[in-house]
Image (cartoon, rainbow, N blue to C red; front, top):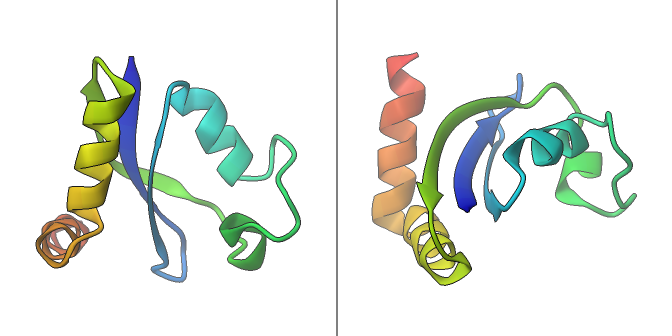
Length: 85
């Protein structure tokens, strides 16, 4: 099982990704597990909060959806979610 997810920090930075272990991935984003010092998360510190996720059976499906969410239409969809909160 794979998850495509969108997280946001207190500075309204948005990150979209996919993983097979959402719980551990969120811990890594929030610094509770070790990260690379050059990663996006290290450069954009703060508390990251999950705002959206979807589940997929295969990695290929998750990658396709991640790519869609990173497109212009996908970013508009994500912004609509952020604006509702």
